[in-house]
Length: 359
Image (cartoon, rainbow, N blue to C red; front, side):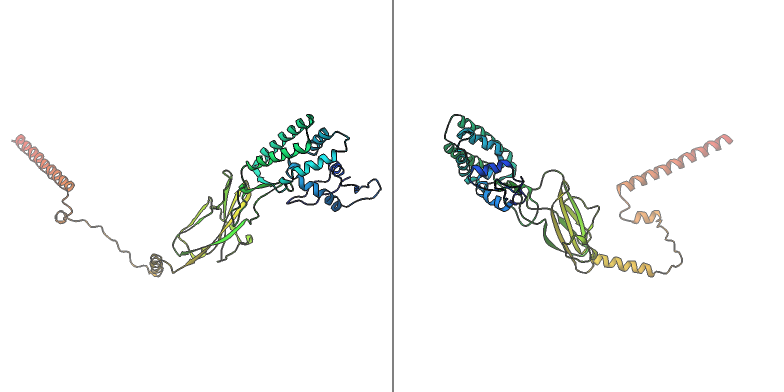
């Protein structure tokens, strides 16, 4: 006995369970027949089963996401009795009380808190059922309390266009019990950048939405030949480019093309940014002069080697230079004169002794 539910939201739902089939009976959606054969031997399609369940399932919404069928059935059995004819009315009252939560959408990070609130609600309803209270009053009170709790949860963050997988905006939808992020493309629009040849080009791989704090990586690629494209088949990796900033200097005509930056979190792409670099203008003057000098070198014919002798000025020429008589040079000159005078004095004394000793 198994029928496939129709797709709800972004994921297919699970096969029908016997507990849900029993809920159909309790809600008055009978006679109905299962695919494997009912009491009269006939069968029904998945669409017919879904249509029969639709009115009940839609009304329960968040209640179906955060409570089990066994918990809901047990509450009604305590309120109405195991074999009471009011068991079906209890289920209907339960569904009607929570119709206001049909299209509820909450912040994905708040699922745990909302689940705990529904768990506490089921315990409270069981206590009220054991005290022989009215299930209609109890369900309305519980639904009103849950609506107040949902309003106190952290709000869903709005999507920030134009691109990117924005995990901070993920929301949980009770209609279908599934989560969803903004329906935005990973590829961001191409940004145009015009730079004069020989100048510097800088690209900033940043987005206007919040990124995870850890395990963020940036990879850069380039599509040359002057292409302005977002087709991944034209791009080649730039191995040494890391981080969210990329800089090219000096810019040359070969750099004309599209640069791409991919932001990933734990190997999952979050956004792809594109920058088209257009290089304009003639070569800089300095570069032109350098190229001319290089051509002159290539045309140069070897001649006889000429030795350039260093300039060795005389003492007179050195003293004639205005910048030569610096305090340091003056001290050096005095030291040389003193040394020369001492040397002459020693030589004269030695000659005098030699002369006297001969006589």
